[in-house]
Image (cartoon, rainbow, N blue to C red):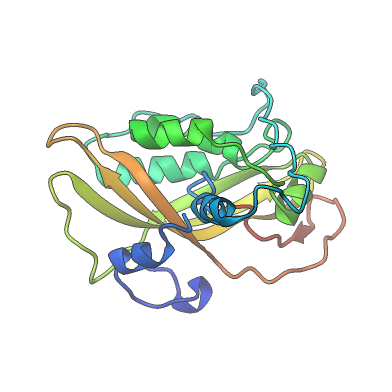
Length: 236
């Protein structure tokens, strides 16, 4: 399935080409997430030893999930199928419950089983230094959870899978549902996933991911009735 170019903000292009441009900004952040950590670190190394501002405390981790948590529990995933692994990872990474999660990175940590050891270690040591943004704050106001559908986007010029390397282009479309009856837009994005494995027959694991957020027109928040809806940008 191919997402509409006007919505995603680009037309047909090679997955490797996009990764070359976006990786290094690199998802999601941990959440598969456009991630500014590398750039921030490089800039910090060049900055003065005397900061011109007071650093913020890292965002705390979320609470343990309760019995009423709305997050998916991955079933049996075929680890020999790169597409299945990529889609299961994306569903886990973009499914939030703001009653328990303080930010998107909590979902990233829940998806650690789908990461390479290197990537999992990086995400476990990462400490978000700023809040998750207005979209997340809107969800949190309603103690909302997100539910996403993930589809594979076929690219005519995508690279063929190698024995130990594969790329997948995914479309993530989500909704948000508040515990007070409010409904709104959830994560809306395209994510480009690099998967690796040590050898044929070994499990595929996500090693890198980068994101292009879909354009979601802003709209004022409406009432909290079950029939109302409000568009919010992806928190990732």
